[in-house]
Length: 345
Image 1: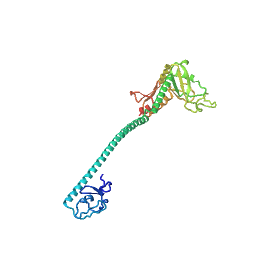
Image 2: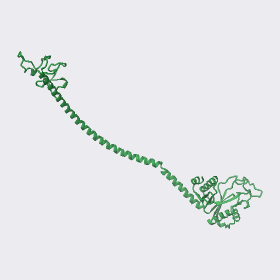
Image 3: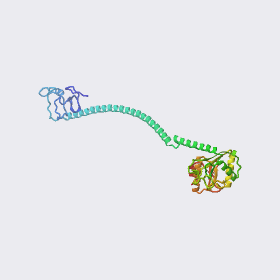
Image 4: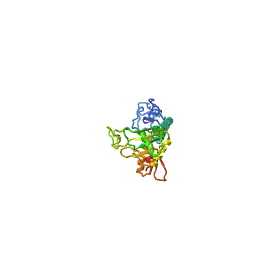
């Protein structure tokens, strides 16, 4: 940066005046030039003192103001234009140099920013991968929770299967049992003697050793049998209230004996309490396979649905519930309540 030829301080472009002879630069204030005065063709005091004057006087370097107003010659104007151009060129070169320095610094900053952006991009990509992994895990958990085969659903299915297996096993334990419904219930009755009479009526040979257990099943109702020692006209206590008697369950020693009873009951078709010489109102007696509680309910639902949908046959065989809509059609097995809703439509 240029210094003032008078005070030695640095100059700025706005307050600089340049000599057209020596190209020296000065502060306007140092050479007593007003701010509004024209500086074209200006000659510094040092150069002026070297110019011979008519009165042979000398001009001091500092402290004397110059007189302005005389028109400049063409040569002076050319020198002034040259000096201005040179000054502009130097200023422009300095500005370009400063701009280049700033541009280099800016480029360095841009390179540093690009490096930081690349590092940030790598970090963001790693976070994006982690977020994607977390989203995948969350979706897997949500799918597992919403999946019908979730842990709870699997347990429910397992429980249902276990119940079905237990029901099948319980039904197999009843493979030698029959249920007899419709036998009037009396106090002090001898059910075994009734079974013997019933065997004679059905035409089945029965040995006492063929029967391992005979009993009524179900809860006892107070009004099911007569109370207070009341007797019928024939002298035996019977169900005067005409309530439905409990079922008689008979267990045979062999399954073949049970099959004989079931076949004989189907052949006889109609058997009543009167045929067994049981006093009281006449009731129709039915002989069926003994079913588990679950299968008995399922058989009841199947019969009701069969009546509603006009199916001709609904029956049981060896603990299985079977149905056929009409003669000649396919036999359908009912295994669950879902089958009832699906088959009888």
